[in-house]
Length: 314
Image (cartoon, rainbow, N blue to C red; front, side):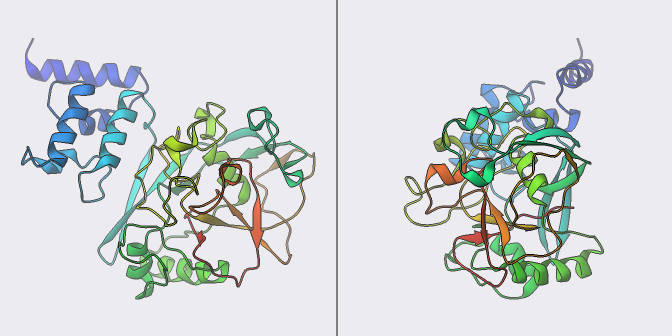
């Protein structure tokens, strides 16, 4: 069978398995028309400088071949990253937004959380969301600097770390300027959008953390962070291909904080006023309990700290 026919067959099979044709081509590093352990080895060899064809190994498009690309190939093998991804560029810096298909889920202290729940995670309630986009990673220092012209972060030795030491109000200023530069309508995610995405959307496997029941696989937290943030996308992604939704930095949400109701809701946005805004996801200096997908936290909109960053929605 000619190679062109083989490639067509492989792409068709890929689509039948739920993988996009684009993802299959990108993950097939060694050109054998499949994504498997040989491609993982190929990316590792590129990392080690044993191959000059490094561009092919940059699966996640961040400009370097590293462990994040190994994770990306593995997830292509497992069929986890067939989400539509939109790439944007502002002042020479690119970032990616992942499509989240709308659906209905149970928000709050669901069964997989066990006894590790706070009173503000109850009662559970049904939420229906329309489709939206959410950042593949937390906003990096590189992107913040490209938009704002400065970097407020405490851990500022590598621009691929998440931006931190930003308040909710700072995030609104950043988003306003980003929208002026791009002509888009980026925003912070609502709390419901954040939790749905962290749980894996309609691909959810019911994990306690964002992408795993083993926090070590997906999060930088107090036991493994060495008291610092880490480069984004260096832990495994969740079912939607989203990185660091557990750990690294707390992420501001758009909503004012309020107690839950048991009533079913559609596209909730929280109360119209309040004193504290929601943060989600835990961070580098917090415990595993704080990194769970249902965990809620909040703070005043003017507070900035090296615990707090953000993730975009659209």
